[in-house]
Length: 583
Ligand code: GLN
Image (cartoon, rainbow, N blue to C red; front, side, top):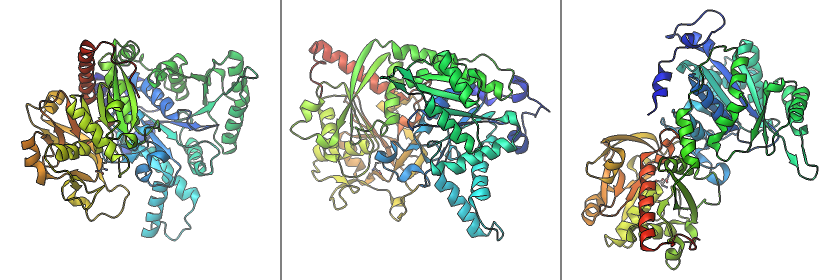
């Protein structure tokens, strides 16, 4: 499906556009790769939540669609070494890469847009920078010198900003987290200034994303916050080459001219970023504004093919023209937070489009599900997803929801903690172990059907110590999982400490809960399912992390398909039952 990857992996800089100076060979050493790579920095001004991640991912998509090998990295100014120890109230979802890095959720957008993997090197925090500098200081690597923000911290930032050049990228986009003017962003802005000074002028550019607010009372768009934000950057020695303006109203030529004049950029470098119906439309909006072409010009890249966005546009067409609707209940405890289940929600968008179906996700707070109201809360759904999570809060509601799905033939999909809850529910209600539990929530349970992994028992440090990243899994034939994946060997990403307790494996299987996927080395149960149920699957890993626009995840695709079938059956039995009984 995705030929572009093959094209990109064979991509040779010198074949595709002119490059000033001597042409480097395709198989080059690190030095020439560094010289070849161009850098785009994306900063944000005025306020947070303007969508730097989406703008960066959209620009990257356009450049990728023109044949360039692009990656995006995020530099976050906070002091946590990574966001793995932050709770979702602080930081939304923690996104996990193939190589097991716990990262910012923007990396999810990068992967979903580019359909390519990111790594540990794609997300760097102030904490990680300081950690390496302090470790080096302890090793005596600074030879008696005083270790300072400039040059030692900024040198480490610059080193990491250029690290991925060794992987042969033509263009590296670096999103700087936070807002210009924050104290903690300063070393990053200073590192950008130094890099701009050190590298050839045409190898670096800065895109600044700002807000142009519309004042209803005055019926006017206001450019002053943008002017101030650009001024503040200039005081720090960095001048943006391109200004991307988030706006709820179209920017007139006059407004663009005003921003251009006061911010000292050309008028074509003032880009309108209007609110979009879907984040996946932003690459096309940016293309209309010629953001990619302006970047290429500034980077002195004069030859580039037309972008191939066929797959992307095909996806948008399906997204905007669904032929049916299903309602999926998302059972979680962070449902009031938009970002806590980001990748799951995006995976539903991808898989819905694939099924030409609009997926309405109904958030159901697990803490408020009780034995008395479970039927009332869940009836009317076409599928039920029990979300990942940690700790005791909301557990009972999740178990009740699993029971409801199992007993009512409602398509069920459990992810990580959701899978563990399905095992507990089955043990309690089908195996006759009423006190079965996970030792995470009840360390004294007589039936620890979910138990701490052996390798986790001696671990005391919380950061980066879970079972993280990609692990292989062998799928048994003649199972739902095999039907979904069409393959015996798969690889999926993990983030957990507890696991299915294999002491109960035989009894569970005899009672009808099938372990259809196992880790080949450790025999850890990765997938459970109930044969005979129309669609009941729980996975210990996080498939949502690998769903992209151009490659929707097969479990989500099949789950939505099963929900469609459930809805159609319901419609035949009871026309009109979908309406009116939502929570
Ligand atoms: N709390 C569970 C564990 O650590 C599940 C984690 C998750 O859902 N990511 O095993």
